[in-house]
Length: 70
Image (tube, rainbow, N blue to C red; front, side):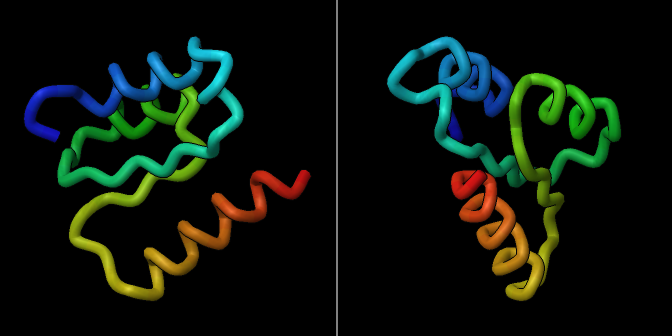
């Protein structure tokens, strides 16, 4: 996202009453494990590092869909 950092979007979504219950999947090329940990700590439900395969995307989407069921 050229004008917004992913972490900023997560923080915004988690503080907005209309958006806070939407599951969040973080997709990034960042290789720093601290970013991964920080994303999950901020509220991301799933983290998918690039490069990824179609089955990995399918798994991520299944996890996000199932997150809303419980």
